[in-house]
Amino acid sequence: RTTSSSSGGRGGRGSGRSGRGHFGHDDRLVHVAKSDHVLKQRREVTGRGKGVKGRGKGVRKGKGKGKGDDLEGGPVGPVVQRVDEEQLGRHCEVRKAHGAAITCMAMTEQGIYTGSQDKSLKRWKPTKEPDGRFTLQPELTVPLPDSCFALLFNGGWFFCGLWSGQIQAFSQDGIEVALKGHTRRVTSLLVHQNVLISGSADREVRLWQMDPGTKTFNCTHTLSDSMPGPISKLQVLGTNLFVGGMNGIAVVNLENLTVTKLLPPTKSVVDMLEFQGHVIVAYAEGSIRIFDAQGELKTETKPLAAGPIVAIAGLESGPRVLCGHSRGQVSTINLPSFEFRLHFQALDGYKVESIHCAGHDGIFMLGSSDGTLQLWQRVGT
Image (cartoon, rainbow, N blue to C red):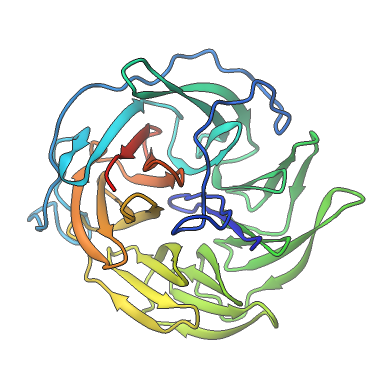
């Protein structure tokens, strides 16, 4: 399979997929090559994020009162650095890694990339300390024309979906091109059978193909009929493209590019994740549904105790679905049983804007609405 996906919107989730593991990705946390020809560089000289020892417990099921209602999210508890019940631990935290929300992330052999509303793309090098903890060292900052909401690395190209609707593309050969067509922020990017597919808050899905001779991208198709409002996430499953938006999900047949189904409910979709031939859909109000490749509903949950969801990701250790919430909590859900495990306070009341799983060793990253970056690991089986 040639599909790889990334996304942004309110929380970017960029895992490259190579057909390995439960979630089809395996981005290795490796040493960063000293030479990087992908992007025009400006070297960082700031310090590294340090982990702080500490211990804490995850919060079990239960709903708070007052500020912890369905609209506001669960009550904000003490920030924890360990969740023993789920064998989770935080390696490090980089405060103010960006000057604004970290909306999307991606991993390549060069390192971990973060995209932000501060109009920059940064690369981080994970370094293992003598005590076994990883720290994150900033290596590179790339100024962008606008705030970044989606990241995708595929086939030697790096794509950044911007607030303006432009997609900024960088090649390993040093070529930089702008893909223009969308009129509002680009929230989701994926590649399927060598076609770049983009979704935007302008309620359109666009298909792009590269001209090998000129190294430019041409928009070959624009889908706007029967779209579910402003688009937040795209996911390919079989011959269908699931399009998540403010008013639910539209299922597009990729062979004739027509909408074949509109899936209830007509609620705002924030993220989607493929798991073993099914798509897991997270809704802003905190509920989750699982559909098969034909769009048939298989399972659904009530809104989670921690409240509104901003981002989800698939952790191969467990495996687990990780759900990032609007007040800094992360919920864990067991797979394939789809059983809720617990939620814990990862951030001090700020949104978990983005989650990115490395695809190996239980490693995952959290990006905060205040620009903080965290590196976590699940060490259990």
